[in-house]
Image (cartoon, rainbow, N blue to C red; front, side):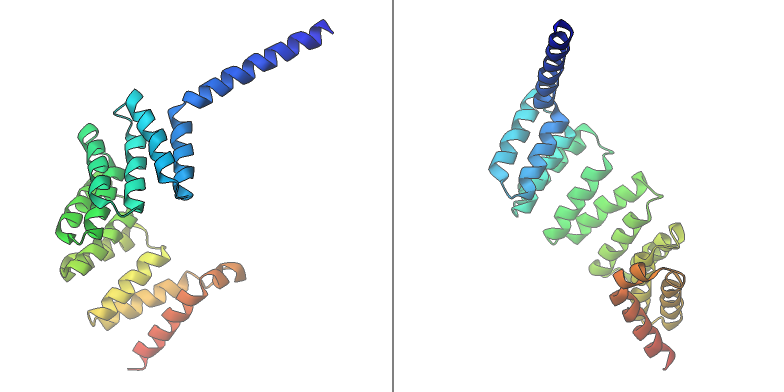
Length: 220
């Protein structure tokens, strides 16, 4: 009985100590705030995040989470302010750099968005998806030479990424470079030659689109 009682006491101590740690753990609280955000309970989420920031004003994760809350509500200036606070603390923070760039894109300031995403490319030059993102921005901005350069760079970095190949193929078709478009539509379809039915079914729309575009271009 004594042994059982002792074990129970130890278990209760561990439980309450653990519960106390969890309650004050910034990561746990930020996770809780993020869950509230997905439920669109922004005021409750903000309350938790602001409390975390009272204890540590330089908590980058809390600042970014707060920025996400503002961004979800269309409060772009407030969101940008939080992302820039992170960059004031950690100038090479790649996520904050990209989030800030996205805000400028959403505000219609493509030139500044390009500046931020270009900075992210320099911070992480081996990430093809960032180059692909930059390519899209340049295309929207109307700088087709830079757009092509970055689409191609993304494919060179990750030559088996279906989205990068599709994006390059569509870009080439848009600028009337048939040879480039055909090559990349073919390369896209080659990725699915030996895939199982489940994978093919999941990408059926893209595969059908690529086949139709390829057929159309080859018939000309």
